Length: 216
Ligand code: AP5
Image (cartoon, rainbow, N blue to C red; front, side, top):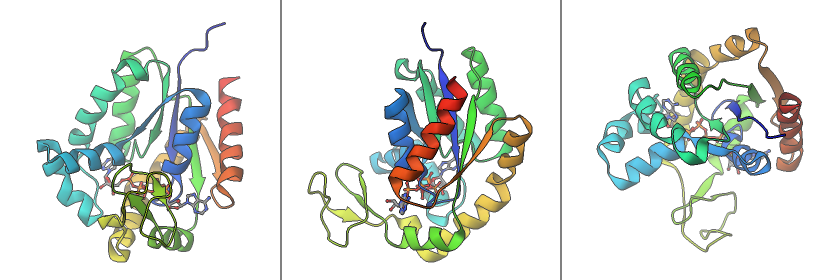
């Protein structure tokens, strides 16, 4: 029997481990990983018009306007690699984005199958983001104290929006605009709570189990 597409939304505060786990989930279930944060950073790095529009919002820890992110998402969702389903990492972040995602998936005869919520407290978020370094060459997220990427040897850099005052703003924006999505998905019977604290392997095992329970 051919599996139908599986579309999973990963929710959680900044630094909850969405990016870390979304990559592994996408690989385990053969889904496309769509990270709006990564796509926006890529637009900024390329100096595109969209990137120029987004940059100031990102550096202040604010959300990029729904319309700008929606435009970018549309193209990726309609690509061939998205046909088997997606892990949405960092999207939706507002109730308007949730409605847009429903509409875009409906056009493809699909719907959100599950929303997996990575629960991590603020003090752990602050600790993790203070230690985060990403590779300027391959984009791998690393935690070493050195200045070279353990995957490709590229230079490790800090994200501008990981400065403590920007992280606090990102957390405030998350509470105000994104947290309401938890009840939205809970009311639809789609939310699965997952403890985001523990080893990366343990968190992944819980997420994979939650995603499997949806596919059955
Ligand atoms: P985005 O890049 O999506 O940022 P975020 O949601 O704030 O999430 P992060 O990337 O900071 O964290 P994460 O949960 O992915 O954790 P990670 O796996 O890296 O968005 C950035 C900005 O873009 C937004 O502020 C906004 O301006 C804009 N934007 C993006 N999407 C948008 C949208 N839809 N609408 C409007 N604007 C949008 O892990 C964090 C650290 O913890 C890493 O160092 C990692 O190694 C470590 N770690 C991971 N798991 C564990 C563990 N189990 N134990 C210990 N450490 C761990």
